[in-house]
Structure formats: C-alpha cells, structure tokens
Amino acid sequence: MRAIRLLARVPAVVRRDYVATAGTFWLTTASGLLLFHLVAQRSGVAGFAYYQVARGAVATVQPLVLVGLVPALHRYLPRAGRRIRVLARQVFLLEVVVLNVLGLITLLFAEDVGRLFGIGGAPEVRAVVLLTAGSSLSALAGAALRGCGQVQVSNLVVLIGVGVLPLAAFAVTSEIHVFLTLQGVALTAVAVWGIVQAGPRDAEKSPAGPRPAPPLRTLLRYGIRRVPGDVALPGLFAFPTFFVAGAASNSADAGYVGFTTSTITLVCSIFGMLTPVLLPRLSGHAHEAAAADRGFDPELAHGLRVLPFAAAGVAVLTSVVVIITAVPVVHWFLGADFGGAVAVVRFGVLVSIPLAVFFAARPTIDALREAPVTMWLLVGALAAEVVATYAAALVMPAWPAALAGFAAAAVLLAVFSYLALLRAIPRTPRKPSP
Image 1 (cartoon, rainbow, N blue to C red):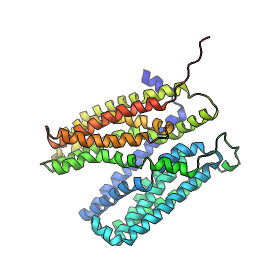
Image 2: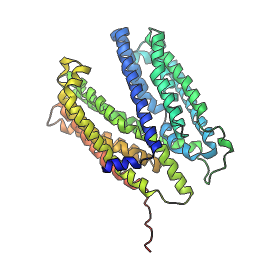
Image 3: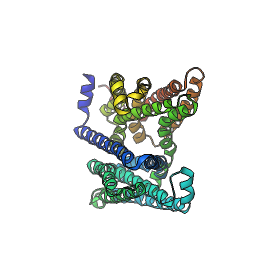
Image 4: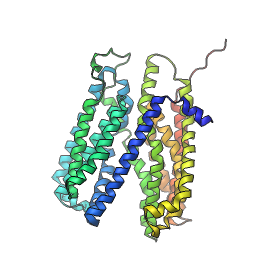
C-alpha cells in the first residue's frame, strides 16, 4: 500500500514520460533482436560475425566520442533559459567536429584497422565509422530534446532512428557493410531533424532568467569528467564473461555467463530509464528552487530517498519471475541443449537487485551534484569486481566466482550510491515551532 501511495504522488506527466520511454526502449530492443536473426539467416556466419564486431565497436567507441555530453545536456539545458536552443546546437556542432576529426583519422588507416579487428577492408571500416557517427549524433539529439522538455519528440527520434530505419536499410541491400552505411546515414539525418526541433521557437524572446545560462565549457567539463564512468559501466557487465572465457575449462560457461549478464541488463533497463526521465526534471527543479531562494521540496526529497528501495522491490519480483521461468526461457531462446545455462541464470539474476538501487539513485546524484560522483562509484565498483572475482576464484569454479565478484561489486555500488544520494539531496530546514 505504501508503494501504491508513493506511485500516486508521482506527477502524471512523469509517469507518462517513463512509460513512453520504457516502451520506446523495448520496441527498439525488439527491432535489434529481429535484426540479429535476419542478419544470421541471410548473411551466414561470416556476415553475422562482422555485424557483431561492428555493433561492438560502436558500443565501445560511442561513450568516448560523446565525452559525457548526453548527461550534460540532460542536466544543463533545463537551466539555459533563452539560450536553450543555442546551447543545444553548440553541443551538436561540437560533436560533429569531433566525429569528423576522429573519422578522418580512422579512414586514413582504414586498411590497417580492418586487418587489426578482422572485419575486412576500407569499405567495411567506413561503414562502422558512419554507423558510429550516426548513432552518436542520434543519441545527442535525443538528449538535447529531453533537456528541452520534449520527451515525446526524443522518443520519436529514437524509435525511428534505432527501431524503424535499420529494418528499412536491411530490406534495401543484401550487403552488410552497405546496410550499416545506410543505417549510419539515416541516423544522421534523423539526428539533424531532431536537433532542429530542440527548444521552443521563441526561446530567444523569453525574459532572461535570474541566473546566466551555463556556457558550453561548463557542459564539456561536466561531461568529460564522467567519461571513465561511462566506460566502466559496460565493463562492469562485460568483465564476468571475459574472465570465464579465459579461466573456465568448459568453453560453454562463458556463453552462459554472457547470456546471464544480458538478462541482468534487460532487468536493469527498467530502472535505467529513470535517468533520462528524472535527470532533466530534477535539475530544473533544483535550479528554480535555488533561483527563487526557496528550499528543495520536502515531499520530493522523501520520494527520492524511497525510490531506490522501491526499485529494489521491483527487481526482487522480476528476479523471482526469471528464476521460476528460467527453464522454459532458456530452452525457447537458446535451445534444449543449453540446459547448463539455467543454474547460471538463476544464480546471476539476483545481482540485478543491488544494481536497481544504483540506477534509481543515479539521476538524483547526477542532477544535484556537479562533482563526478557516479564516475567514482562506477570505477570503484569495476575495480572491486576484478579483485573480488580473482579472490573468489581461489575457492570456487570460474563461473560462480565471476558472478560472486559481480554481486560483491553491485552490493558495494548500491550502498555507496545510496549514501551519495542522501548527501546530494539538500537538507530542508525545519519550520520553527510556534
């Protein structure tokens, strides 16, 4: 009942934005899974391998080329006032320059890069470069729209760019590198359309706010300091698979652990959607409260403190469902010969519970603290995971050791992120008694 009352106090617009954002995520995820199947069926082992390497390269490089500008846009555009459109476009143009410089350098050594990663020659490398550029610009345009309060347009950019156009590009050509090239070009076009829509048309005519808009260098400073965390987060999920691949005597165990961490990722996506929904709103609320010289809303502060516990409760229920349905899910998704994955999934999915606490606390920390708190939390968690995994491997087999190390790091991340949350929320002064 307390959870229901807490949910009822959440503004309807926030609930609507969260549902729409989560729905967009699951639709684009379904599109991606369908593409995996289609590429494997049409292009065979070699084409599928290139497709996987290309996607992996984009996922690895994108956090570096974005230099933390996505959360920076979420945090600072709600504070930009009449300069909101200008600031959004400045960030977008800066990213275009960064992508052009890095892209040209990569293309100069395209043949060498292709041989290094085993993905072919210059055409295949050019396709990956274009896909990286399109994906990065699309992510930036979506963040700018969210920072401007245009959540539905942001979801539309993601749905069209990531969900619909890749399927259309796949239908146009049978060559994988051409398919990726078309996908990158389409994403770039959608990103340009999105950034043109960002911000109200008459923003420049609105009255100036009580505080000056943040300059571009403030966004850069905020973002760059968070890049190590953006790299550490996927590393936190990827390390168990890499460790088992190198340490296990049974090669199948690495695949089972990889499937388990993917399952954990899907569970955590329920809470990961809180950041793009809450971060701009919390940042705007804190800015307005400071400008008006009034305290932070005490009811909102209470809700933010309770939110990580509510997220952990949802993660518990989700984990129980996964544990109960593990056998049919594994058999349906992987096949009847993959029964060994069932025990790994049941053991590993519990890691999503402490991770839910972190993902629920993260938007508040990022909105209210300029210091890169989450970066230090994530880098520290990754280091703890490595140490705990190797320590556990001294007394247990590879895959339980990997998941035990992941669990230990997740618990530490949950504890310290909640402490950081409590410190980030401003203290509301008590009203004097009459």
